[in-house]
Length: 256
Image (cartoon, rainbow, N blue to C red; front, side):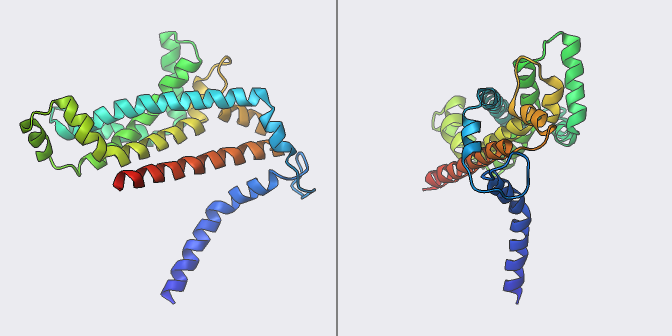
């Protein structure tokens, strides 16, 4: 009885999570522009998406921005997490608390704050403003994830590496990085998803010369959700599944 209850409970949770996505994928094959009634199966909307150059420019902008922001946030956040783990300094507890403040701060507050900062500094809105904004809100997530993993490292490992003649750089690259690899992969995937998905902060700090996909979709959706958007979102969901499967495969290979 308990086993049946647990299975039913988990099934309901997964159905609740994936029925909307499944509906979106099914209706991406609907032979109608705006209607939610089924008018027949078609692949025309996927062809329309693949031939929409303006849409793919926005996709490329989002991918380029997400990759750049993820790489920078992962590098800065990893060094910050290791520093918080290895060293003791005045204000360390306050610094850790400030990281959580950024995480729980509403996006609209952070977006307006960054817009004011860029306006006062004279920075024109575009790729650079989006890049700085995305790195800013991604760094705390990397620090929290990597720091949690770093706390499992035996502190004596640094002394052992030093006794064996390893430099700080060699210790970091050959010992710390392999141990932190699962956290690094998780942090990178989370940063990429946050950056690629963000619309609230990006809406405030984006310029007309660099349009990203979330803002493009938001503008199109205001006219009504058409089937071309369904097809695009289905492709993006497939890309997400591919990234998740790739990360799981890399993690298992490292364990082997």
